[in-house]
Amino acid sequence: KVKLWASNELKAVRDKLDDELRCVLITAQVIVNTFDATQGEASDLDGLNVKVSAADGEKCVRCWHVLPDVNTHATHLGLCSRCIINLPTGQGEERKYA
Image (cartoon, rainbow, N blue to C red; front, side):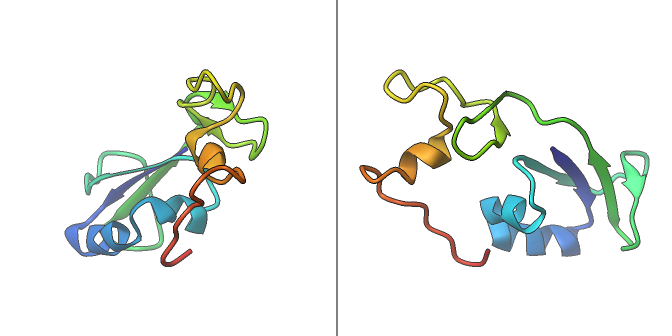
């Protein structure tokens, strides 16, 4: 899990990427907060602090991402919502940027 504390300028870039930021950062979970210099570790970018920790949830047997929604779908035990959408019977994941 990656937690970011971003300035308004950087948060605008994050908002454009929306959920795809996790793909760019190659992580299962991303949480973006308003910039707070007392939180996380300072990065090389002004207005961005970062904290990396273990993700919340269980490991999906298909994608291996650790997510809170794994095992919450009675007909697809062991899978996360993203994997269920990407099964042949699902509608497929839609991405715009990453």
